Picture 1 (cartoon, rainbow, N blue to C red):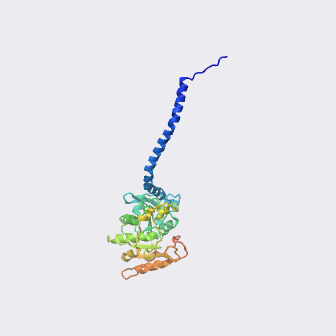
Picture 2: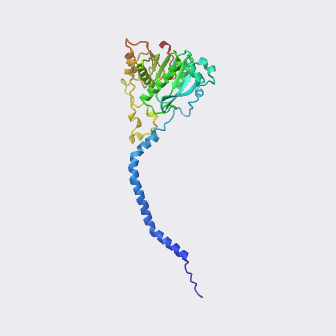
Picture 3: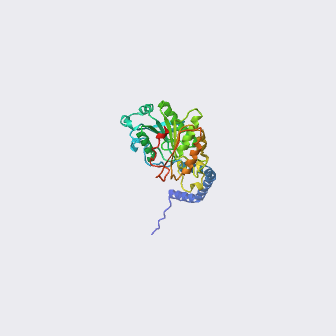
Length: 339
């Protein structure tokens, strides 16, 4: 029986040749890839060490948490303010401030469905106007701030509650100069529409520093506030502030500060309340809790002594107690002596 000899076809020989060739060339391909990767790393590593910290800070700090959560500041009626309109003012180029304007409670029925023009026109009705400069963190929708707006509205006053830049839905990054510019913007907007109505600035906590800064800026222009209320006022000359007031703006991951510098390092704040008080000429009402855990009552008494000079007048200090916190739930009904 003959054995059949099968000759390999040309195609199979070619295939075997290609396999052998590829196996011989594979090591060179791997070395090329490794060399390319090494070259890329030599370029990327120095660039990464230079750029990455800034990128990390951008994503860690810029995208901050909003408190209170899941609220729509465009709808003040959701907060029980059914005679309030939401609006936006331009403080500086690129800076938009969210502001609530609440009319006196006696006009709540008339206010239903009205537009911004109607609200603006009501500022000239002769009722006093309060501009409430709130404290650090959060937004104008915080419960105790809504409570202040309701209280003043019930007493027959207009109330404007702005969020500084970086707060709430206002754009920009908070700085001391920026917050002062924002308060000036709101005050000038109100004065342009309120005619001869009294305009009073009410600052709470951080807002006391903003209010006194604003008062001094206006005094340089020959303008004096009709009245100023300072609630929970701090004094950086007499009390050390151990934390930066704007760190909340940057969403800081725990312990990340050990590896990356805080972007607030160059965002210095002073708020020279003591120096400002020596210059101010407005009637001032001080409100302070006797058990304030952030600003001790002794600081308030020191501030009172600063202003208790013959050249000043209409100075009051009202103390309230029963709140162990710096943000009382509207324990402030002592405004009448100001007028």
